[in-house]
Image 1 (cartoon, helix red, strand yellow):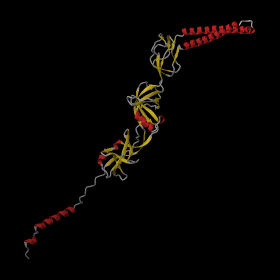
Image 2 (cartoon, rainbow, N blue to C red):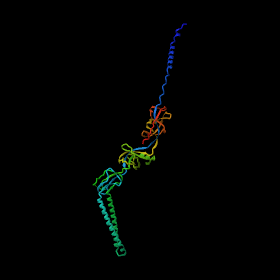
Image 3 (spheres, rainbow, N blue to C red):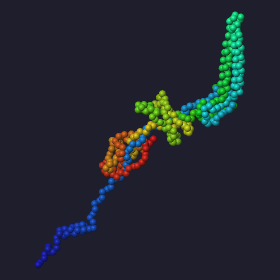
Image 4 (cartoon, one colour):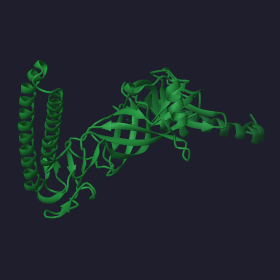
Length: 383
């Protein structure tokens, strides 16, 4: 049997098909099939639940401490200063003797007035006795009427003289009492104007200035538009409290209350001065010092709030990216209100419990699934 060349050797096309078959058998007969690439993990974000917080409405102003009572102590009579009964800059109590004037001249004047009174009383008694003798005689006709008239006149003069001398005694007693100059109230003294031994009187300068320390006023200007808004909303002085910030930045531990509002406004600044009364037991408030003033509601108001880091803005306004219960990202348009420290009030667009993204917004887009980790904090609204 004769074998031809075509029957012994495969053609070129056959050899190609054979190579493909061999290669395929090697690939599929390997240890494992090639795996498709795995899906990318869901992006992680940080979320915070929107919730109701105690948001205290407050307005801030700059105020000046003022003494409720400030008295300049003066001498009521003339005399030499005999002694001083206080330390300059120290506190005194009501009725404490601050200065004493020389008493001797006024004691002598009182003694003289008492002697004159005794003489006048004796003259009155004599005039009374003369009248008592003359009257029955005149009635019986044994004494002329002129004698009775004279007795009546002298008795009246004697009585008037007694009253005059009684007034002189009273005045002398007052003058003697004025030699002791008392503190009219509790307060702190300034520097004494005169030294012991100097001559003073009603026309002299004040002897010392006395300032009441507790309580104190704090006066601060409030724009008239704010007062109009407050009055329209029905806010009263009893519903708010006043809190101070001292010059060193610390918060004054005692709260005060608004006592009155001036009846006239300042035409230059369009403001009205409001005065608050502040306790001052530690004497930290000093007359004419500058302090920060915050007026806030006594009862906190619950408001829906979130972190400012969740707030996003575009040409249409404010919005947030929130995570739904299905862990999907959703865009929500909102209306925001005032800031409270790191928080911001949400007026509309969100409900309590909504989870807004505070970190990782740049990694997500609406509709995709995310892995959310929630912030757990105890933050409260800034006061």
